[in-house]
Length: 391
Ligand code: FAD
Image 1 (cartoon, rainbow, N blue to C red):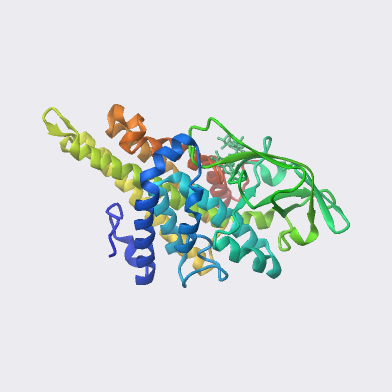
Image 2: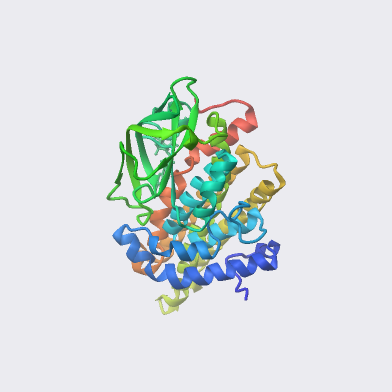
C-alpha cells in the first residue's frame, strides 16, 4: 500500500491524503477482483454490473462528497480519482455509477429540499435506492436548455408529466428517475423525482449499442404520470440549476475520460512488450514508443488540467466554462489515445480479448455524453468572447 498508478507519470496522487490513498487502494483492489474479470462478458451481454451495488456502497463510492453519505472527509480530487480508477477498469461501470452517484444524487443534493435530501441521500448512498437522470429527449440533446419538450402541468398538489426521454442510463431498473420537464405555467425547466413503478411511465432498453454496452440506456415514455408536489425538486427553478448539476458531473466525466485513456494505455503497453515482430518486442521500435509517449503525454496533461478543475470545486470558484474545458480537452485527448493504443495492438486491437477494443469503443460515448465536444468547446468560446455561438 498504496500501489501507485504507473500512468500517473508526474505523481499527482501525492496530493491525496493518506486516508484518501488508502481508500483509492481499497477501491482499486475491489475493481481488479470483482469488475475486471467480468467486464468483457458484461459488455458483450449488454448487462450492468448490478450485483456489485452493495460492494460499491460499502466502499463509499456513492455520493462520496455529500455530508449525508460520505464515509470520511474527502476532496473533489479524491472523488475524481475514483472516477478515473473505475473507468480505467471498465468505462461502463464508471458510467453506471456516474449516473446514479453523479447525475441523480447531485440533482437531489443540489436541487432537493432538506426533507428530500433526508429521504433519498442515505438510501442512495447505501445503494438501497438506485437513481437515473432523464434530461435528453428524442428531439433534444445539445439544446435541452431551450428545446426540452416534456411538460409538467400542475393540478392542485400534483403534477402531470407528459413527454419522451432518450438515452437514460439505469432507467430500466432504477428505483427513482429524476425527470426534467417544462412547467406549462412559467415555461421554466423543473425537476421531478419519479418513483418506480409509476403509472404511465415506461422505460424500454435501447438495444444494439456499440459503445458502453454494459450501461443499460432507455427510451422513456411519460403519459400522464402523476407526481406529488412533495416530489418536485424544491430548489430547481429553471435550467440554471440543472447547469449546476452538469457542471459538477462534467468535471467528473473528464476524469472518466482519463481513466478510459489509462485503461487503453496500460493494455497497449503490456502488449507492446510481449508482442514480437522482426525478432524484437514491438516496444523496441521508435514509432511504437512515440505512440506510447504521446498517449502518456495526453494522460498527464489531462490529469494536470483536471486536478485544477476539481480543486476549484472545493474552493467554490469552479464555473461552467472551467468544467466544460476539462471535459472537452480530456475527452479529445482520450479519443486520440485510444486510437493510438488500438493501433499498437494491431489486428488484435479490434478484438475484446486483447484489452483495448472495449476502451476504443466506449470512448465514443464518453466523448458525446454530458455535452458533446462541440458544445463544451462553445461554452469555453462563449467565456472567451462573450458571444454565444451555439444558438
Ligand atoms: P445532437 O444534439 O443531436 O448533436 C448532434 C451533433 O451536432 C453533435 O456532434 C453536436 O456537437 C452537434 N451540434 C449540435 N448543436 C450544435 C451547435 N449549436 N453547434 C455546433 N455543433 C452542434 N442523457 C440523459 O439525460 N441521461 C443519461 O443518463 C444519458 N446517458 C447517456 C449515455 C449514452 C451512452 C449516450 C450515448 C448518451 C447519453 N445521454 C444521456 C444523452 C447525451 O447527453 C446526448 O447524447 C448528448 O448530449 C448529445 O445529444 P444528441 O445525441 O441528441 O446529439
